[in-house]
Image (cartoon, rainbow, N blue to C red; front, side, top):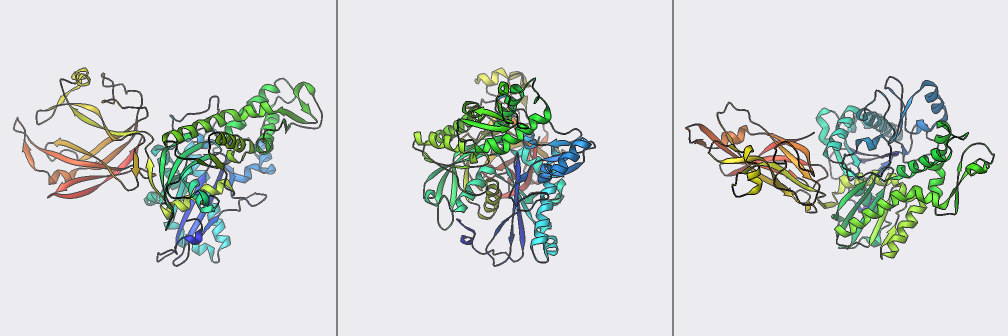
Length: 591
């Protein structure tokens, strides 16, 4: 899989389109692959964006909105001086770093990171939909203007295209659901085509790009161990991988659970901004316009150039020198220690995450692949390389545009199914009725909660029934099955079935999800989603029974089958009909 020509020709009988979109905190990239019968798949990047001065594979994840909540400018347009003046004159609001507002509440975040507020009258879901609508419009424009008879081609393949969206390691089902809804609203697929929206983590896409680039060929050895560290604009994603096969195709499995930290490049920029505001307080540069100009200069020049020099400079304004504020000929003079302090919190989190990845992977890996915008910093790379050298660990950065890496890797993920297993980051389980045991202290504490079923047995609701444990290996395609029994009376009862799926984020789950009061959730438990299904056919197949009070009822026995090793959770129901396994649909509904 090291290059496109290593893939076999597409065996399908008609043309198909796959589009991948990597929406980053600061930048977005998009790639596509037009599958044509008999031809080897070829990845193409979108390199032309409106108002972009030079061709680039990435575009800012920034939008301007007017007072009515209508989007007015997108991507590279928001860097255009004419657009910026227009935005100021019309009091447009800028939406930036908005992706981080989507984050799960449990993700660790660097202290004092303050996200820019969303524009008034605009929701996060609307921003995401507007941004995706803009991105897919540019994909269409690229194909229409690049291919002969491009419009006819787009109209023939776009209605059935697959869209691959990337997510940080820490994003879960709720975030995927909101992204899918936004993609449908943006017109990437129609209402009936929601399953053609697929998700892959940025780290997984990046490791596939690194392998495909050919720059890590010497590291791709059977049973070898690698750590992928994606230091992006907003998040740092770290995952360990074991190489299970090289030929005829690359096959990987996770060797340590993926981790995600909100500690990307924006944290470095915001640390510098806090310094600027404090340093210039009460000065002629103590204004929002001046501070934002400094932040822009730092973000685009000083931050990218810093490699541990004694001094760095940020353009302030004009050409005068003011010794009191360390301004020399219009430039703020920053010491090495000051620059290092801006990077320190992110660097600390990266090293912490790498330590955990090595520990969970039994310290088998001795090689780190760095990708992402923050990883391109000479200072960050040098610090991590020196850190690795002290531990006997090699650190490299594959060449190439780092944002394109994820977008192209997402296409490789869809085509090649390279990763065969993943590691559970938490405990996953279901809520079940637990048989009342008078010798069990946990049951005795909850005696006031017990109920009796039609067969006369006593039970307590809310028992924890684990499906997988933290750090378990989850094979792709493997189903985790939990059996249920349910007593149902007359056939006039409803047949809709709903079971909650829970996650426990601490070390060892207790036997019950709730405290003995039956109302308060124990710390560490979080409701992930509900698995919904219909039991009517299962009911019809079950034999009739008579209770102790002469009531007719049926004891329904069925299984909930969960696929947890994929990048997205799926479920189905199973029961017996004449001793034959029968399957029924189940849906996953997120809170």
